[in-house]
Length: 240
Image 1 (tube, helix red, strand yellow):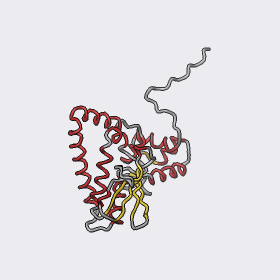
Image 2 (cartoon, rainbow, N blue to C red):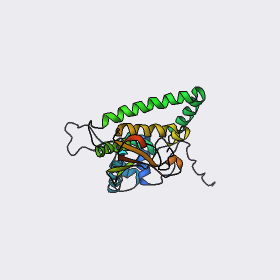
Image 3 (cartoon, rainbow, N blue to C red):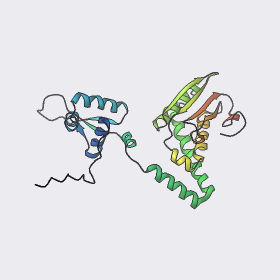
Image 4 (cartoon, one colour):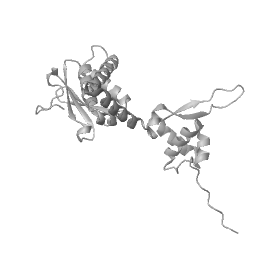
């Protein structure tokens, strides 16, 4: 008897899972909403273990519960089915950054520096309007910095704030979701500094202390009370 040939893996079959977390996300992405009991059976682990993973994914805002509609005559607690949130898209491969960089390169080639500057100016105006709406009118510096940090954090910059001597603050951005675009057109970084200065108002000075594209691991801005004359200028006089 000839030995049986090993089954060949289908080209569309998923790769082996690296972790339970990855397995849950992969199943929800490929097959849609699932209940915890079904996930546990699929993965060969206990419902409690699945529950712990789902709780962690909920905290990260990657999954959300979707209660099943109530059925007449059916008793007991409704079964929750779990689905991916929009934020979960960042976990999966995405060519968005490469596409953006390619489009920006094409725009620069077609329209030149003046055309790119018009694009950046339009983006700056839009950001100023949107950020301005989120900052309470007449708010003090602390409230303005806090509001700005919340906006940037929602946009994916993993933002933190720290108080500094003299009533100032450090705005720390641990991640740059537009890094690929910023490398293609560094005017994005300059326009964001302009937005920060605008929404902080004339009573604040904004300078950049650390810059991801200059070799730092993050971007850090110093925001302190005072006139705007020194905005964006290093202590040695160079523009950041």
